[in-house]
Image (cartoon, rainbow, N blue to C red; front, side):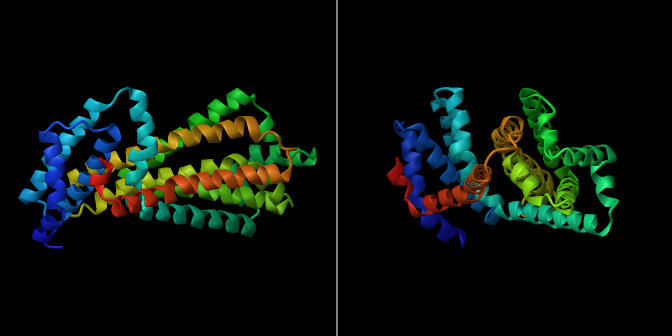
Length: 326
């Protein structure tokens, strides 16, 4: 689109937003945030196609004014915290759907490789999971309690240990993105091969269903959010490799901010996964229908928050005129 056409298409809207500032109109925090998101989208487009134009400078100033107004209008930190998770993050995450898909494909591919390698080489499982774990699990299988490992530690200790470890893995997946995304891909590979080997091990013992119904009670969210964290690292890698019209440093800085937001979004989900692993997974005698219900509900939650909801907000922002929300 030519710059003149872009300006003509949005001019009336920008004038309205500017007049609201000049007239010091009283707007709800939701309305201010909606306007800011809209202006940010326009600014992003303008920076991409007209980086040194007056239009870009004008939109940058207008968006900055609304950004300041957001912080002046917020009532308490809790509101900001809630709004980040319910509106601000999902409204922007649609931009990273391709990186999320790439992270998923990398993880799925190496999971299959882990399973295939375990099927091809009997020693592979031990090299990945370790002799101690394999021997302990074989002993548990002999005692007719193959999932006994989830009952070893106390509920609280397991919850805290698993949650902290998962958050650590998430931060590593993000930070290793600075290696042009290759570090993130390597970490995804490690976890995926381990998962594939783990599942094949139980399949080989005739316990695939027993293991899956137990492990995926917490693993559905845990593994899904590791993939999301991988997306954060790949976003950083993309910012380094493909700066577009920005300088490489500017692109890297923007990617770090975007990736960090993605990582922050995973924290509540890792807490939920830790609670499930610490307090629910250990109940290995629960009915199959209940285990399946928890697994499907967890999957639905992940797909809703990271796939459907961001696209829904994007579609809503395109179809509903901004002035009506003010």
